[in-house]
Length: 137
Image 1: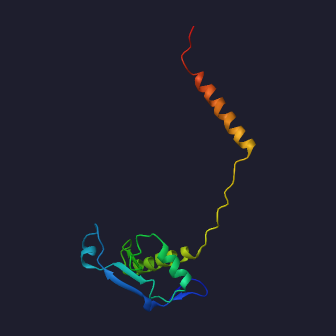
Image 2: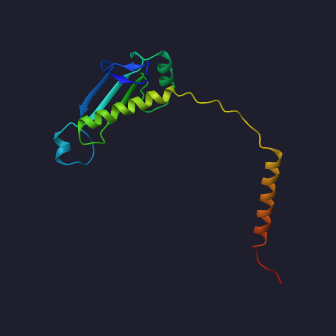
Image 3: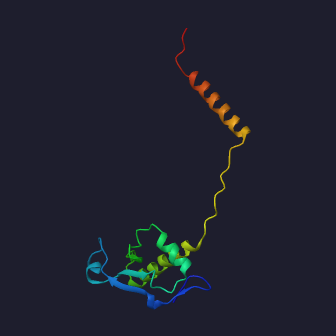
């Protein structure tokens, strides 16, 4: 059972976790042991509320397939259990990140005084640079 919030829980039966062999350098342990974890979570078939489903499907994340399946591969650690926990934590952070609603930005204009101050700084800097030229006697 993965707890997203006080009201939202994901049953373990909806999360498909398979052990695979990790990639990269690692020697004998890597060749013999399936320590990496492949996590698959079908968004549309899950028991998540519609709000979460819509927001997840709208995300342009490379971990979400066109069919609406989240695929996470965890192979950072040497033990399968740590990789499993890492994959579940990454799934949880992805789902929690969708729940946060961004505040709407209110466009503002710079004040007249700040614009004048900026232009004064620019002319002052330009004069300073023109004084750096060759001195003509």
